[in-house]
Length: 462
Ligand code: FAD
Image (tube, rainbow, N blue to C red):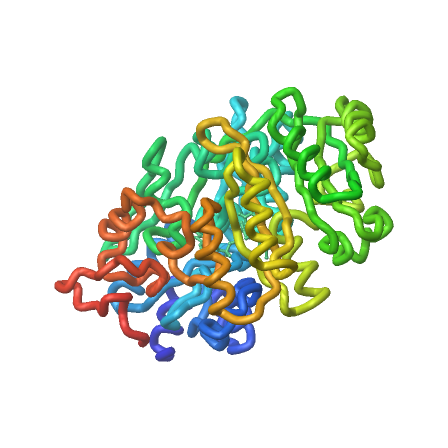
């Protein structure tokens, strides 16, 4: 990047140490976990920003964006870089806007709303909330590292979703403040339905600068692992606990064998050849759950009190997309899909997939409450990757038999399966980023304003 820009950024921030130009560091801060996907690996390896800037407050974000707008510099926002689809990887170089230093939890309001800066780590919000009797409604298994801005920008749900739905449900995201990419960047607050303009838009239509996140009353939790001789009996039991209202749960995850064999640090809880379920259950229901599991033919291989994120073992470290990480460690050929099965026909759907693809697909089920209150079997199945064609065949087959797939092997908002059909994210991009400078190339239905003189996917690299 032209040295005049580097000097300008140092002068805007009044602190050259927050303008990072060392190539190794810039490369590192331009990456995320896209390498989970052999398809994205081919597309994104080697993509990097030109420099990283680290603002401390909203006024500095505005100043930086004003400069980038004036000079047609692409800007890619970064939280903690734990996204899986290359969401935070700059496709056209330019500036990486790293919000890690804007990490304050400003308030836990008495009615259970956390007010946070975007770089606040989810684990810190959880710990702060629990001090006053609240906790996160849902969080990714990357809770310790991930930022709340990145969760809203690129994530969807996780632990807690079985009871409280995903981020998009039940007004969990109460309000979002964004900074726009215009000649004179504005700070705009989105509340109620309008939060969906910004949610899961991968930082393409505004820089989230403050978040109001609804919390749930804190519960005293326990963790439990239950093994079953067959996946069918494990699935039946997990479905029962996930769907019956009387159980207070935060996590219900079911793995077929050999997935538990990948969890090397906790292999003593994974009996050879058996399916396994991991639960976070209210402590007051722990013995009742154990009893119900035994009656259903299960064997409780681990049970213990949950004392927060430092608890060991922390069963959530093996769930959601952490499962894929353990599998890749065991065999690099593993990758994954993100699915939603039909609660009525899930067994037939799984049977059809097994018949067609054999052990190329391994079932890892996660339950989530949808916005209508119905708990559905979601899944992050492991896929033994053979070729892109075979992967696409599996995705097409899933869709043919009614299994929803949010494709994690594409690098654009629209292709990922969580794009809003009413185009609200695109409409917000047109309003807030008319030149197409924010994370260019990631919202492919966007065409920049011809009068602004930018190319269809954003400005040319400077
Ligand atoms: P980043 O990766 O930094 O950013 C994600 C996206 O949001 C990018 O497009 C970025 O440009 C944009 N963004 C970041 N900050 C802002 C901002 N302030 N304004 C606008 N846009 C912004 N996800 C889940 O939903 N559930 C899971 O259970 C889950 N498990 C995971 C397990 C593993 C092992 C891994 C590697 C990933 C997992 N993920 C999961 C994905 C990811 O960890 C989460 O979505 C996480 O919340 C992303 O936060 P981050 O700070 O790392 O975001």
